[in-house]
Image (cartoon, rainbow, N blue to C red; front, side, top):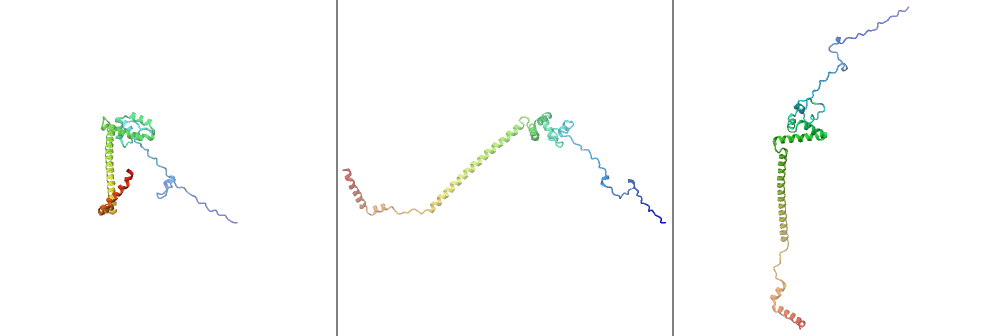
Length: 203
């Protein structure tokens, strides 16, 4: 009879995470993502000056960043925070940046000159414009005068060149003068003949 022999099947043992060697590699999927740090948003310069909480949809935040506190301080000193907010809410978003720049400029001018404000600066600039326009008109008149002088000089040069190119006039006397000088009796006879021809007409 034949005897059947059975080979033992190999057994696999699973090792715990603690039994892994330090040199064993861990797949990226087994790493847990680290929690992101919370983003701290600094309040805008307006809310920081007013000592209030800066909301997510703060009207002043895009135009008064926390890095420019003096910008809002100057505008707030002249116009006030409530008026600035009211002005910005009445304007479309495309015009708010220009409006803030105008308010800050006017506030600076009002602090420098409490009486006239930006009107004084505008008048001074207008005066400079008028002076520059007068200087420009004077310079244009001088340029026109120089152009006329140059044109007159060119015309005189052309006339002189034309005269130098033309032949000089002859110094000989006219023919009738020569005849009268050579034979004066001939001229007298001619005059007598002409007189006799006209006598029958007057008779």
